[in-house]
Image (cartoon, rainbow, N blue to C red):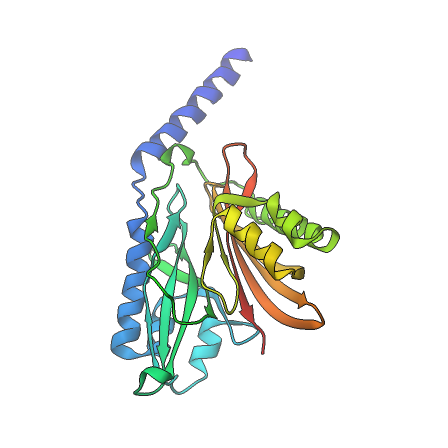
Amino acid sequence: MKKLIFSAIIASALTSAAFAQNKQVTVDQVVKAEQNFDNIVQKKGMKAGFLAVADYEGIVFKPQPVKITEFYGSIDKQPGKLIAEPKFARISANGDLGFTAGPYVYQNGKTDDDKVFGQYVSIWRLDTENKWKLLINVGMPHPEPEGEMQTDFKEPDLSKQKAASKDPFAGKNIIVGTDNLLNKALATYPALAAYKEFLSPEAHFYFPGFEPIVGPDKIMKFLDNEGVSISAETINAGRSSSADLAYSYGKARIKKGNIVNNYNYVRIWEIGADHKWNLLVEIFSTVE
């Protein structure tokens, strides 16, 4: 019996090693997927661009979550010109999930006064044909930026590569639980205290009307200065097969003084060295 168990352990280790050696993954793969998408948008327009890269489960917020294929398949054409540039990107060790974020400019006219500036987040998923498909796209307007956003493309830790779990719902349930935990903290404590326990050292916080806030210290200062309270509810989530990158999205209500506004939120999570899920990105999109 001991020999059988030992043989099984060795076989499993060899399988994992072979997987790690054979899978070549770089962050440039997801960056190129975004750039290809943006090129299609420039040449053929937003409708053609979104439909060309849409995941079969892919969503946009118009303002409620709706399938990309459903929304863009039902309109004749979306006016205006959209230019986006990836500046922040990560990819999972297994190369099946990634995201890019960066500034965008939307113009529906001929003058500079017609320009709308903002920040986007795109989450990409590799399909069964090894093609990158757009799973989530969300944007947030803010004033014209004073400076250029720094580029931050980080390579994955390939030592985290592993075979996918046999339980397709296990990863999702873990992220739903993590997302719910943050939402419960937001309902129980001030936003400053709630976020402090979850933020990644490289966290990005995209809040409507403000340029991107980067780093836990700046995010904490922003929350303290704004004095907002946030309540949120999880809708859905997912995780990479290598269990190192994940996403969640849901509904949020943000209160400042006597003013309350409704938002969609999208969060991106990364696993820390302590095996704790940390919040890497959060973006809020206004529900008008």
